[in-house]
Length: 564
Image (tube, rainbow, N blue to C red; front, side, top):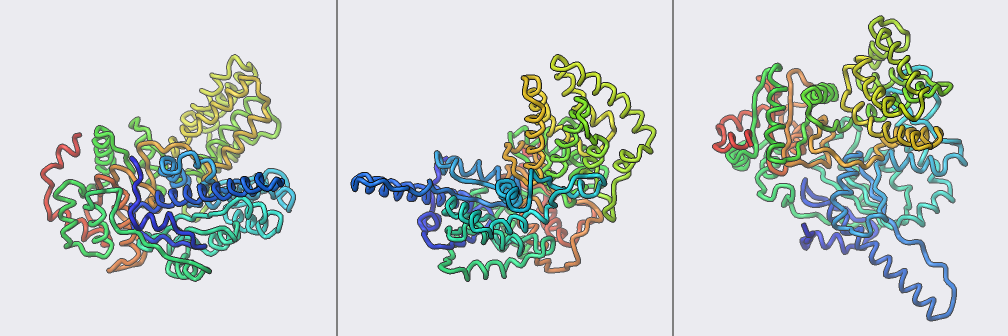
């Protein structure tokens, strides 16, 4: 589809102010407009560079031209980064390779790896995930919380600051209202002379309590930067051109449940609510997924907790429904590390800590109240579970035997590592283990082709690090499962919200000023349909919406919607 900007979007594209705040609601085209602005910036920079070249030729002098301009686009999550690439590709065209799109942590990690070895961070640094830090016996490294402060220290060194000053002429930050103080300070240190474009929506500020952010203060700070201008976009959603779901979501955000848009959303089948008992949750979700996929819809399923996301993912895996767990980058990264450890064990590489790697992976998939180690992870370390030991010993023997056989058995080696999940009985995180297998198979094929093990180890280590900091850019699967706080920047044809009993929504009461923003964000992810599954006694945050939807009655066209 050809991008045709509105007058307001064109104003953003043409703006040359040092700082531009683009404030707009969900689905209004902020990202696409920013991509078009980036293209315009690069084209103008190329034109200026060509003029300098031509002037130098005509004057008969040799002139060192500035490097080709580049743009940095910072976002908060790997999947959001991937979707930025997808949305931007058609707008930016051949200039896409000159836009660096990264998460905050990913960009900090890049700075540390590129420059840290000469300034206090020697050698390739290990990222200490939350799970990695829990399990004793690991190597030293940097935690997530240490990445941006370390990178900020490096950016204060004139030579490093100069590198990024020469590299970037425009820095774009998505969802800037959600930056905390560390992220905001880090952002200001990156090429500070470059133009800034901040994309945001105060109505989507859902991380205030979780990240201790102050969206109003952040907006005021951005507006106070020298030369800053604010360019709002019109409220019309490009995600749902009918405007029905966006209008219903906006009404729900301000707790106006009598608004006609909510009734219209229900009557047209764009919004449905189902009350379920715990035993019926999975059946209802699977029914809705299969109906949506029959209609070739992409599907996002939102749960309220990380634990619920993991359990639902395991259920879908058992039902043979391919999907992606969004927000489980740690589990995916540690799956790569655990599979790498199994490969090292099979190849008899000295210093392999395969038990520890498996314990870290188990810890990454299992949250324990109080923050301790999951029992299975501890049993993996202290060898105290007879059933686990009975499974590990034959697996170890087969790995050694197959690894010793060399290239002719490498396909079998990959199969052994892929099957280790079920043999060990890890019971949680099957999707992330399966997602890591293609990376491991590719590494084993490198060995099969004659590559030295050191190259393979470097590939797998880099893949783990990239996963942990959200630097990957693989295409998202048509079905994605995530918790509610991973919804920002997503969109799908069909969204399914699964709410269960006894879920904590904070200490808020009516009018649920913060909670209603979450309701708004969830509903505005859908292009065509939003399905909400609630317990028989919904939380007060959701209950008025549930009551209003039920009072409208079942829409006439709900049967064909569900059956495809």
